Image (cartoon, rainbow, N blue to C red; front, side, top):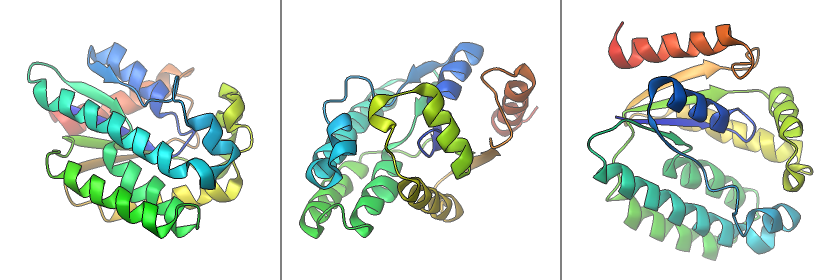
Length: 204
């Protein structure tokens, strides 16, 4: 199976991906954040680096999808999907005026070519988090390049996530409100998520 964890910056995707991989003995695929050559520059100058960053993520995610497609013997849990790149992040950058129309249309042409070869995950797990939760989590992990992420940027992303989830018709999606959860430190919260997953995947 292919399980994908989706959600805004700071929602807890990477942490949950790792914990689920450890618990279920699933293979894990992480988002290309560490070692990303564009991310820090992007947060300092979004207009200059938006297109470069989106292409970098798109290429990385496409490579992951190819690996997933070739893996028939294991369940894989993935931190963020190729669909979020286009339908949420690139869309947000374009509609907020950061990404030019020329760059956005070029990006979409490439995305549409890639997506023809991509299968939907067996299950999307959407971690729903409001702004205070996101800001708290971002501060907690202490990445320097994320220190100046604006509230408006996070709020716009949340709005696009809600639109994406409400209109998603290509597979199963499990929405988990994590605003009052601390699944990293509280075993009860993590067990709640495991129970929900078991019901969704294994009907237990």
